Length: 110
Image (tube, rainbow, N blue to C red; front, side):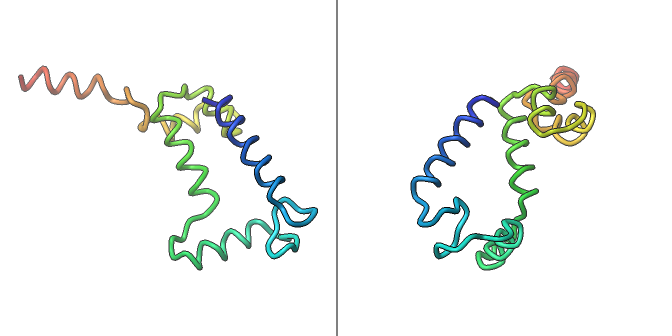
């Protein structure tokens, strides 16, 4: 999962470099974007979607957890010092989270 993500990011960066109109990869009207954070916030406000870079980071981590990525690998990818934080925030999105609880309830009611 992480390897695929890195390859996709590399390809996206190559596409951005190939399509740039100035020496800057992150540009607007051939001018350098001084603050990606501010530019992202302004674009979010204009779109009426109102997301943050954190929203995108969290969504990506949830998708990785839903795809079955191990908490250890996800912790490393997210830059967490250990997997405790990762488990706390993302374990509930894994396919097998609480599966045993659901099975026990199903067995009991069947």
